[in-house]
Length: 158
Image (cartoon, rainbow, N blue to C red; front, side):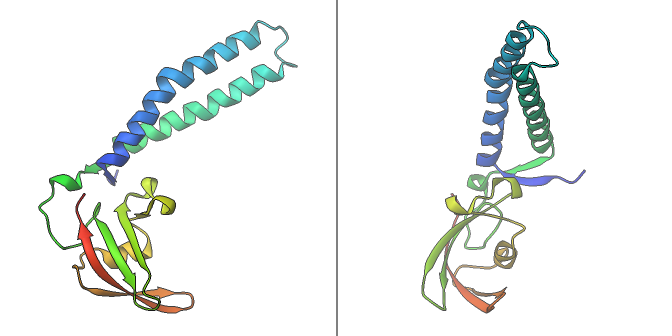
């Protein structure tokens, strides 16, 4: 199976979520199932069915996280030689040449992407056009309303 790139920060977040699910949430659900069983007839016991459904979702999430971690290629940008080249995990400051707006994005794995936090997936069109470029380069991004040009003003390895 192909390795999936992931930042060290993203891997740590997944491991923390996995630990929380296994050591805190799983025992809560098992306890809820036990309490619901003690109330009698399981066919008409809504609490029991809700707890079992919650357990099913949680176990699915645990398996999903374990698979992601086992297939992850963890890349720690802090250990990379400093450069002005855009690579996976780098933070890029861009200026939209059409309206002079400044934006900052960190290039991360698909599971870590969160636009509100300024993290874009390495597979996004913008990230793909940035990879391998240097500080002060200008990129063209094809958008539905035409081509937008961005200038790379800074590349950070943090």
